[in-house]
Length: 81
Image 1 (cartoon, rainbow, N blue to C red):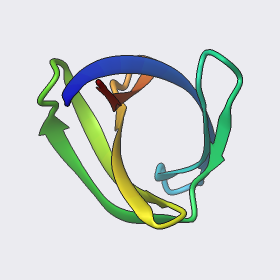
Image 2: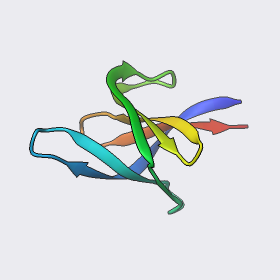
Image 3: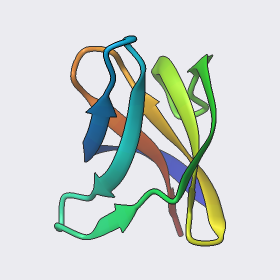
């Protein structure tokens, strides 16, 4: 199974202290996923290219990585194949 960078739309809550909490991820086909929990937040490089703030999030029973490139763009490491 291969992974690729896929840009997504993210609904996020921005707090007065400067922190951000992503709430939902929406793919290009308008499929939306509610983020149940943010597990970890840290600066990190992606395995598929790019870097930024990595959010390890739980959606249902699965964990995934969501990246904020800090330029207004967000992406996930999507699985293909």
